[in-house]
Length: 176
Image 1 (cartoon, rainbow, N blue to C red):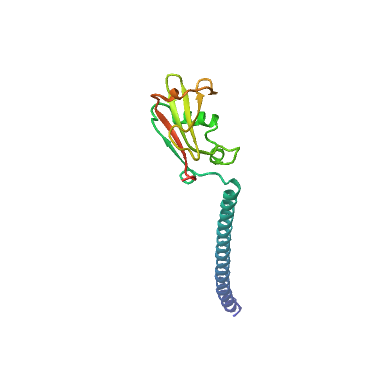
Image 2 (cartoon, helix red, strand yellow):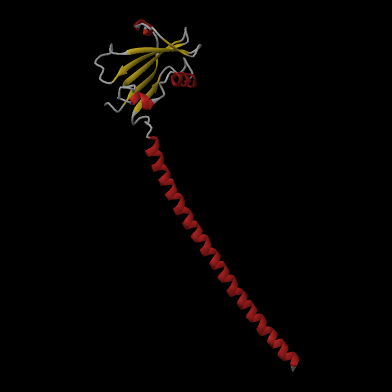
C-alpha cells in the first residue's frame, strides 16, 4: 500500500509542479513583456523630446541665413570652373559669409546682389557688388580674386567684365 500511495503522491506532485511551472513561466513572460513595453515607450518619449529641444536650441542659437529663404545662389557655366574651386575662392574672398552679406548695418555687407565673372585666361574672378537700394545696373562696386595667387585683386576697371561669362549669382531675398 505504501507503494501505491507513493505513486499517487508522486503523480499529484508532478501535476502541481507543472502547473506551478506554467504559472511561473506565464508570469515571467508577462513581466518581461511589460518591461519591454515600458522601455520602448520611455525611449520614444525621451528621443522625441530631446530632438525637438535640440532643433529649437540650434535654430535659436545659430540663426544662420538659409538658402532660398534669405538668399538665392545660381551657378552658371559649370564646365569652365569646378564648383569646389569656385566655392573655396568665394569663401576665401568672404563671399560665403551670408550673415555678413545680409547685414544692413554700417559694419555689414548690405548687399542686394553679387555677380561673379570668370576670366579663364588670367585665372581670376571678378565681382560686382550691388548694395541694397541700388538704382541701375551701373550702380555697383567692384572686386576680384586671383585663383593662382589666392589673393584679392585691387584697382579693377569696369572693362574687366567685358566678354567674361557670369558664373555665379548671389541674391538677397530679404529685401524683396
